[in-house]
Length: 235
Image (cartoon, rainbow, N blue to C red; front, side, top):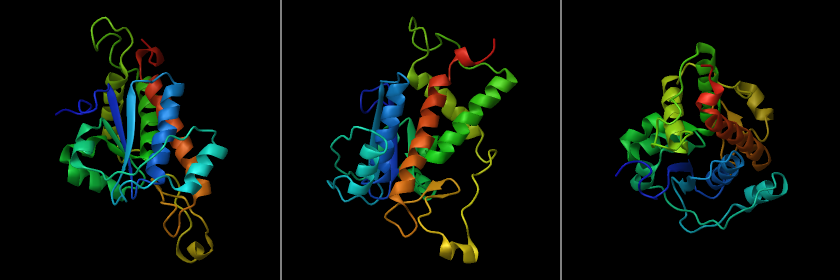
C-alpha cells in the first residue's frame, strides 16, 4: 500500500494530538478550510489521537473558539485512535508537539521524513519557497505529473514541497522560547514553546491562544502549498 492510496483521494493529510478531541480535529478543520480557500479540493484531512477516547466528541472549548472567533463550520467529530495504517496512508503527518513525531515513527518508520509539527510545517514550507525563488531553482515543471493535466496536481506539489522541507530541518531558527526558570511561575496560559503548540488540557495550554496559533500556522502552510508551482519561480 502506498501513501494516499488507502482513502482513494489524491492527497491525504493526517493530523495528530494526544486525544483527538482538541488540537488535532481543530487543526484538521482549519487546514481543510485553508486548503479549500486556495482551491485545493482534492485533499482528505483526517485526525487521530495517540491516546484517544474512541468515539468522544469535540472539546467544547476549542469548538467554541473556532466557531465564534474563526467563523469555521464545524463537522460532527468522533475521536479515533491513530494506527499504523492511518500513518502509512498519509502523504503528510502533522502533529501538535515534537514528542508525537516519535509516535508516528513507531507506527511507520517511513513517516519520519514527512512528519512535522504545525509550526515546523509553516516555517519550513515558507522558507523552502523563499530559498527556491532566491536561488532560481526549478520547481517541478508544469505538466510533469499526469499527462495533459496542465498545472501540477496537489500531490505532486506536496511531494516536492515536503522533500524541500525535510532537507531544511535544523536550518531554520526556532521561534523564541517562552519564559523559563523563575519567570515561568508567573507565565499563564502559555500556548507555544519552540515548535510545539501545547495541549490546552495540559497544565500550560490555552484554548484561547492555541486556536489562533493553529490558524496562523496552517493558513501559512496552505498558502505555501498553493504557491509551490512554476508560476512563483523565475524562468
